[in-house]
Image (cartoon, rainbow, N blue to C red; front, side, top):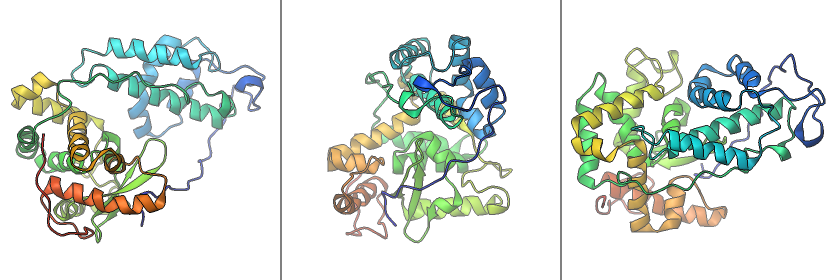
Length: 341
């Protein structure tokens, strides 16, 4: 099993929108004319899975409001970047926006998903996809991006001792602390993504790839026990689930961070979110092991397989400095140090 495995998946079959010509024409536009954004977004709402719709609905709504009467082929990459800038500014004041950057990320992700469907429907040519070349606005350092070890422990304490389901919230926080992954990777974590013997979890990325990441034996045991107690595979294949067995959604995070900020005045002042945890872990790994190991740690792995194989040991060593626990795949069973600021 390799940290750097890339799955080979075939795109699922999709229904062709009834009002559209399926033959791609010049510049990615169908001969019959490409649909307007509002029409195509309404079509996607009836076609995508409920979880996918929940992920992209707010951004699709914003796109529809802004570009509803424009055709899919019209916007340029520059216009998409300008739309992200405007969306970032409008979202700046929200508690979970990270200065509006999260909103810009979500908007670009929603546009890329929309255009990916348009490619499959033969409405545009992949080479003419304006969203694929769009770049996110540069992220400005936020005062709440990096936490101290003591602050991280306080966040864990609140998550694991308050609310209507502290067991679930503790697992969410611990997964982010140990893997530095994004929110969706934790939501999507499935039972077949757990390698319990080697204490590895398979984390999926937005673009269809994945990587294997080590976690502590204690966390792996807790994940398996949590899923088994709440219905196991008979209810859902997702690992993290509510008391009724249903898988979590992004709404779980909203309640979690509202509660953390309510109980910790400094967390409210620093606007602490999931990103604060993942950025703290990344800084810790980068300071102790260097930028290359940090990139492998967060799944941006090295293309050279030999180099990647060598760095996997460093990733496990980095995890051990965070958890204070030995790992079954570690070169040395003795954990090194503890998280620094």
